[in-house]
Amino acid sequence: MSNTARYIPGFHEYQIRPESVSGEEETFMAKGKFFYGITTSTNNPNKAALPLVLASTALDEGHDILVWFAAEGALLTKKGNAEKMKSPIIGDIGELLKKVIHLGAVVGVCGTCTGFYGIDEPDLVEGIKKQTALWAVQTSVGRNCLTF
Image 1: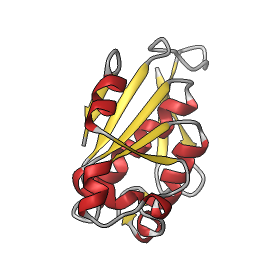
Image 2: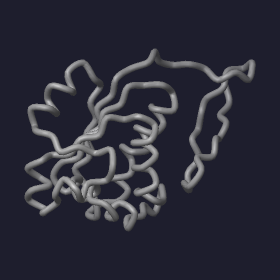
Image 3: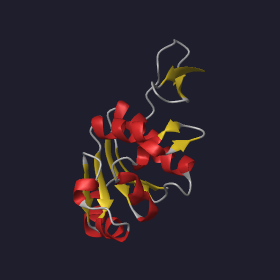
């Protein structure tokens, strides 16, 4: 089995995909549902970007994705904030967030957290909705959950 690299436009990384001996890409998993929790932002740009890379990759493969921003991760949901952040490993976090939203992820942000940081509904990136902890719990049922 060999690996091929696929360039993701706008990012500094390549996505590695295993290939079978025949040269065809192997499918390792049936379509699934994933919940990615993001609790970091400027305090750790690499860690904040990683779940967005996973969400983007999963969306490209047809998986059902939900992204939840909480704690310091809520700062990324304010218009202009994610665009200012760059991950030394992955690159432009704002571009990646827009891609995840464009590809159809359901994206929510902790309403209590946005209140703490003074982020009002009109300040949110288009496609992101303020939600409650109950919403995060209810929508995560039956999903593979990863929090960063």
